[in-house]
Length: 269
Image: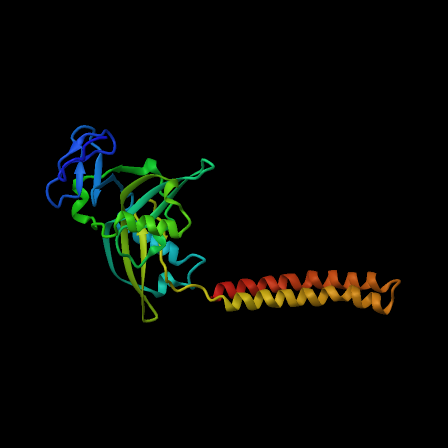
């Protein structure tokens, strides 16, 4: 059995070389293979970052496109006011899961407190990651969620620990925008590497008008469907055919009207 390493010596996860961190040091670069690692209570994991492809102007443009999309209320991009913006490299725990069937999946868990947990859904690819550089450290948020806590969260999402084949700490480039709409404050995040927009709470389109249109359409066609049955009841010979013809004809007339109503509701909401 190997002798335990001194407390101030850890091994690189890539090449096995000995690393000698200073007291309190958590970010290191291996002098033998140039890998970057993070120390979490004597556990050594790879340390990466995602390089940004958007500046603030392009991130704002991406936010405006999202605001004018189908998920948000009409004209949110025009009726809201962005009151502040900030940039940071935000830490997440990166787990590569390999199931018993051999399928690989990337699982993300926040490594620091955030009000927008939707960043878990970021489609992060290993090929996009780079060795963490000290040049981005000034804008990096330090991790505050221990690795063990993140593994517990993953287990709560039905991801067993024995299926996690790789662990790493990744810093993501995020623009955080605070905006007001109808006097209420909201937060949206634009991930500057992929341009994805994330928000837990935002002014969403009201569902009631759409449900009303859907219910009306279902009621109209349900009523029309009874015509052949009623026709058969009054005249089993020709009544069914007449009722079917009436159902088809009125259905052709009703469809454009219902479609126009749905389009009008979509334009107003």
